[in-house]
Image (cartoon, rainbow, N blue to C red; front, side, top):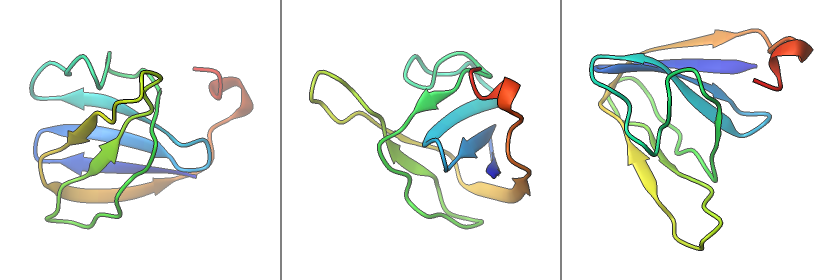
Length: 90
């Protein structure tokens, strides 16, 4: 199952089973850490959030540092069906 988080400035999709996240769209350009819109990125952990709070997640980084991303406040949360097998590699 994936979860979509609409924040005040961006829309994110999280695949909790495969521990990956992607930004689908946003008001501003994505940061280099978040990557290109639509690109799945692995994450180390994801802090539980709710409407009105931010999303906080540290990224997997092979050099031993722990870069972290903090979003604008969440305004909506939706749950989606699991990704199709053909989509898992994207």
